[in-house]
Structure formats: C-alpha cells, structure tokens
Amino acid sequence: MTEGFHDAAWLARTRAQGDVAAWLERLPYARHIGITASPDAGGDGLVFRLEPHQHNIGNILLPALHGGVVAAFMETAGTLDLMLSAREPRLPRIVDFSIDYLRTARVVPTFARCRLLREGRRLANVQVMAWQEAESQPVATARLHFVLGANA
Image 1 (cartoon, helix red, strand yellow):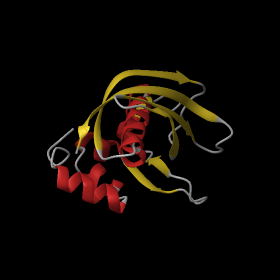
Image 2: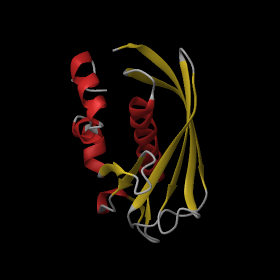
Image 3: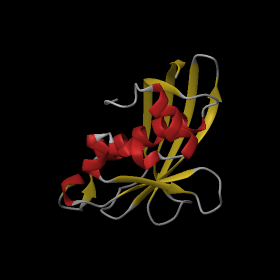
Image 4: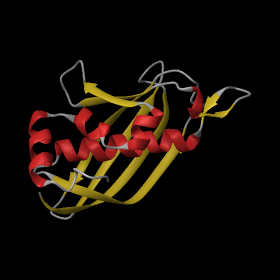
C-alpha cells in the first residue's frame, strides 16, 4: 500500500466516512486500470466497477480483458472491502489469493461484490464475485486470506 495508508488518523477518518474513493486515489494501479466503488443500490456494502479500457485487453482477437487485470481488480476490491467492513481500522496483508475464471471477461464494464466470510483476531477470509451483464452469471470468483495488521 502507498503513502497515507500508514497514517492511522487518515485511515480511521476515511474509513468512518466510507471514503473508498480516497483509498483508490492512492493506489496508482487501481487508477490505471479504472477501478471505482459505489454503495450498493440495495444498501448492503459496496459494488466495485472496472472500466473497459483498451489497455486492459489481454486477448485482442476476442477481445477479452487480461486475466491479470481481472485478478488485480478482484484483489483490490476484496482488500478495500475488508478494510471498510472490519470491526476496527486495520491494514490487511494478503497471504493467499485463489481465483476461478468461469467465462470470458469481455471488454465491457465489470462489477464485483465482496463478502466477509470470517474475521478473527489475526486472520480474515473474503469472497469476491465478478460479473458483467448479470450478477447471476459471474465471470470469476475469488477467495482471499489476510493477516490483519495492528489496530490503526
């Protein structure tokens, strides 16, 4: 993570405000590939969005998004969602990331929703699902395991 995330007051303030945009602004790669986040219309958490930029294409013949871009999108979403939904402001450190590519991710807006499966004193598990046209037809699912840092 870049500068600012280690500033406990800034992290606590942006977290209290739910200002995920401030976090994304400090992540150059997230800005480059076009990640944004907004509150879920149902009022339950966040929905992350990956913009369909030409530089995110991995297979120009289909065309399709690069699998690494999809993975980075889902990892970023899972990490930031955990930072927002954890009981206390903490910096998670990813220790395991497993992704299942289910169908071709075309060059259209891609969305992700995260679910905190478990938050212990030192470890957390998050599930991420990414889709494009319909949430019922995911393009990928991922599981992330984190070590939770000291309280901010």
